[in-house]
Length: 217
Image (cartoon, rainbow, N blue to C red; front, top):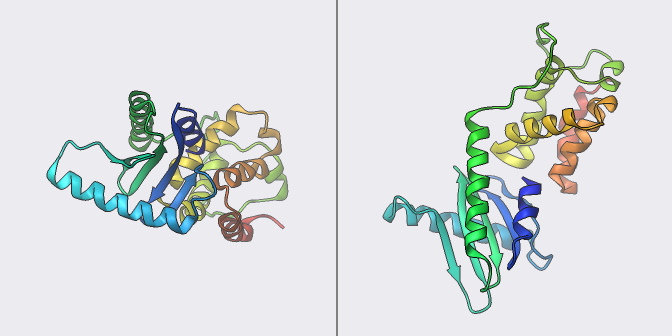
């Protein structure tokens, strides 16, 4: 999702965007630093209420547009409890932004309905516990069986800092990891990729604290 937010910012006239969870608060944001987290949280909560009120009157309502003298705010609920809002110049390319939001929403819906299945020729059953057998297992490339063993733990820890999209995010990162040259570094690199997606020092510390007890000594 972090990359998707950056792509929205590349649209002419889009100043930046923010992904907001109704339960978690700000998840991703590339708006200028003048927009503090507490203010973004307040804006996200207000937009969530406006979107909910709008859908009560207009069942087919898709986007909420708020027009001000020098800016426009476009908000959309991508998934239940997950909204994205963008701050734009009045002359922004509305059609391009709408098209990008449509593509993002379709991609997200597809991932929610069809979870990523890790690729592997390994047919052995996953271990029942969430611990790692040895330090050598961390250094080696993760098979899908090892990943399936780790996924519930990673998802649960990530959900505590990034909300209900954690399972999708973990699968996305694992798919990227499989296609990269980072496999030789094993789990350690996968964890680094997850930390990069979190992109918040305090939340990363929370994530690490939840994962650390399960790492081999």
